Length: 91
Image (tube, rainbow, N blue to C red; front, side):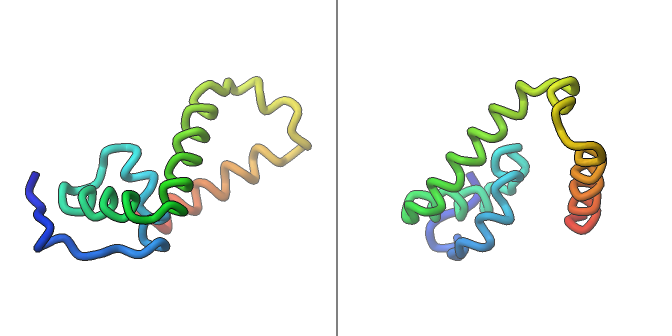
């Protein structure tokens, strides 16, 4: 672990939400991971958000392409476009 309490700056709730998928993907630097975990330990609201993300990841990991059959026409394509646009803006 490269970060220590003295060199770990606080993060706020908004930054935590922006980092949650990277945290779940184990893609944060050691320092950011420590900052993230310290915030979650001290903030019940963010701890709940993290748990909700974990549930969504677990549930969506079990979805199959055929599960989208019941969506209204065009919904799947619009959702994929929004996700792709979001990924581009995050890069």
